[in-house]
Length: 195
Image (cartoon, rainbow, N blue to C red; front, side, top):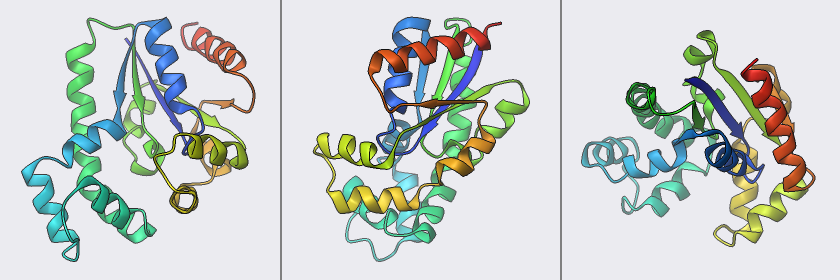
């Protein structure tokens, strides 16, 4: 089973890449953002968050997100709680799925910043970075209608710049065109990974 990381900033198209891999390459998708949201519901995680952020009015996902995405200090604080658990979950899931899938995809916005992919890359896993023009990303994110323009801009500011992420990536996909163009680029990369 090949291990591939897929990352990219908000509305870059990272989830579209993962969905395509799932549908066309028998890939298991480990969605780190989704897994993190599930962790926020666990009692021991909530207790750690309450300790780290005593001023939180409640422990709803929305309250936590609003606090965390305010600045990089808050983001680092919560990442110290969540990322080690995600790291363990990834290893556990790889072990569980290795006999059933050709490809194991770790879909994570902060895969580089968290360091969770480093050990996998050392073992031969490849990292795909999805990038897109900021204006296009803003437009895409707004079309989802679940975040305000200001929230999206705040999150864009907190994310590592693409030019820095490129240094850590094995492949870079520019997603400024059509879905068909995106899918063609994915096929080319997967072909190289399986060479």
